[in-house]
Amino acid sequence: MCITYYLSTMFPLFFPRDNRKLILARTVLVLTALNTVIALYLTYIDGSGGSFQINWVFSMFIGTSITLLVDSSRWLIWRFKKPNLIGFALICVTAAPIGYYFGHYVGTLIFPQAVSVQVAASNRGERAMVVMCIFLSLAFCFFFWNQNKLAELRAEAEREKARNAAIERQAMQAQLQLLQAQIEPHMLFNTLANLQGLIAIDPHRAQYMLEQLILYLRASLNSSRNDKTTLQQEFRLMHAYLELLAIRMGKRLSYDIVLPPELQGIEIAPMLLQPLVENAIKHGIEPKMAGGHIQVTASLEDTVLHVKVSDTGMGLPFDYREMPPAGDSASHVGNANVRERLRALYGTAARLNLSANQPEGVVAHLTIPLN
Image (cartoon, rainbow, N blue to C red; front, top):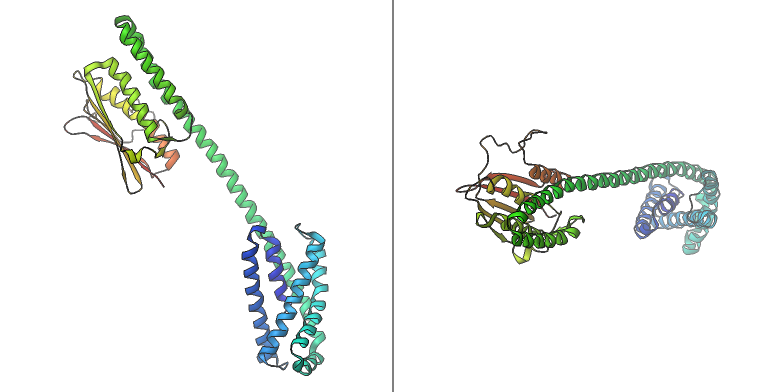
């Protein structure tokens, strides 16, 4: 009987208020189950007399009375604050006998025909039952108090885990910004060097190239400073970049960009695709006397985004390694940065693979999970 009040009051006491409905339902189930066990004990083991139905009703009233008395006392004294252990224990000790007698009284009002049976049972061991009720109440008081301490420790561990996760996200963001800062000057300095050379030999083309560079920088400014961008924006930037290179290289460079309309709104990290195009130009098309063609395509298979940058340039070197050792000067800086960013953003779920194109050139295949 008295055991049930702790299970019902300590749950709402130590759980967030937004979980009260769930805790209330759980409390009712626990209260009913324990009072049923007590009724079974009184009926079939203790031999105090009375039917199971009568003992169950008396147990429910006594347990509920103690529950309401303790919880209302706790509410009047501490409200939503954490109660004092000694004060709360005193409330438990006081509420146990009061709740016992009050619940017993209400039970006799419901079952007046059971008064003689209950009086006989009370005369045999009422005082012992009250004392046992008090001691059990104190025992459960300390038990659930320790459970509350463990809950507080778990909550603090969760808060610490959340703080560490926030710090990791900040560190990851700083790393991504650093890697991105390595990519942007690489492209910008090459373009400015090309523009400087073009001014001396063809001022009109240099003027047009400068206009395209301004358009590119204006379009890329917002995208490159955000955590996310869309495929449509990334393909637009690649188009502007390839147009700049086409001005300088003339007929030696042709390109084709294919982005299905249904994929335009897909969000990815910025500056992932441009380094692949830049490497295709630098290591594939430029060293080849006849130049070549670049094709950029995007497709979606299940929940995985596939972006391919194909060129018809020089192809992979004979000693190419997919994952070169750290510090290997032969590795492509753009590809290395893309792999680092993919690892920081998606772990091992995203990949960048280079393979031979047919009949010549290289295919850079980027796979990114979208969920």
